[in-house]
Length: 130
Image (cartoon, rainbow, N blue to C red):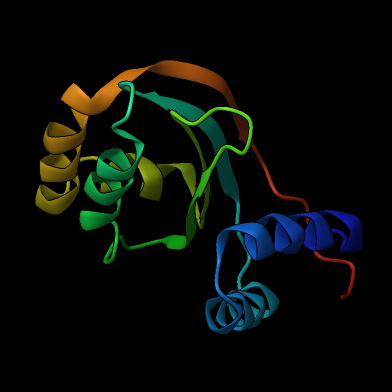
């Protein structure tokens, strides 16, 4: 990940995370080498955004290979969220979807989802120094 992308990710994280967690993410990013990333917008059923966020975070604490999993509220749409994920590999992400805790979170969240917006898969580029 180059300096500009690193700073852009930290800026997005700053908007999503309290300062103590942001410092922890900075430390992780200095040591991590993410090879796969996802960015996506999810639309909650009207008035159900907080419930959807709670459901999606329940199964995401222990996902092998996950470097970062950030959820933020869209400032322009009261029913939308943005999810940013960084993984050590695409295979680790695929394997996470089979974990019992993640499956439970998906089942709980599914009825709260109204649809999906923009979605992008990306490969973080190598660090060139912070």
